[in-house]
Image 1 (tube, rainbow, N blue to C red):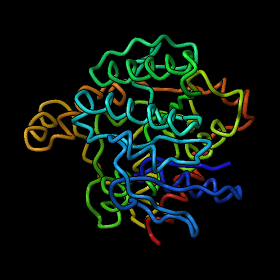
Image 2: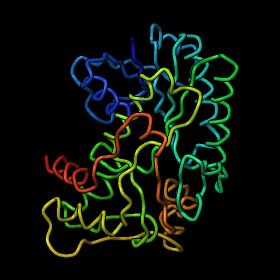
Image 3: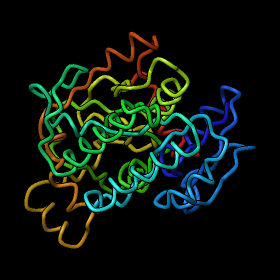
Image 4: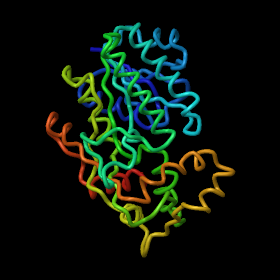
Length: 307
């Protein structure tokens, strides 16, 4: 078995570490340098995933491909479908199976703020509609026999491996500055711990019966953003109430005039302004494990932030 991981942002290095922990060799393919350190022995191959021919060469010999790369957040509508089409074509040429890092945008706000395996795919945002079209295209490629495909759908990331956790939460908390979040502070929200996402994607990739469908991945028990910030604030050694800046409404729109990522995030505020609770029942029944407990995940995140 030969594993190829496309993308070296949050998930690429985490997946490489997960496969290494299982004694499985992998290589990471990306245009730029990895955001986090790769394990010893993991090769980094430079290739542009948007170029199907170049990517097919980089994937040569791979039996299983995990796709985690993405365009800039504000450019999804224009660039993401073509990127995925290139990845599918290159994986087909290489003769491998394909696991796609998807997300929960296809479900919109869910059923009264809850998302399960049975929730209808009714996206209510432009990025959600892009994601649904991409998922449909990928599963069509599977049904047509072009390439075996599985989709994996975590919730919003949290963890020391995630750039936004570091930049907006733990780094600011360590400096005694206000931690920054989007939306309201008092709504329950299910987060995905990055090591859990890597573990779950690896499980799906290695299971022959996991292909041909989308999997909601394990999420931690829902907490509010205030609870998240309070825990990380004390976890990095600060005392007293956590300093928190919650961006929403007019203030967020004003910042969005100068920050394209913030502007592109505005339509996703429903995830934080309303309950957003996720259950991964199918995955747990098939693979037999649940997400890392919140207290343990946030303690590990705080410890790594201090390292």
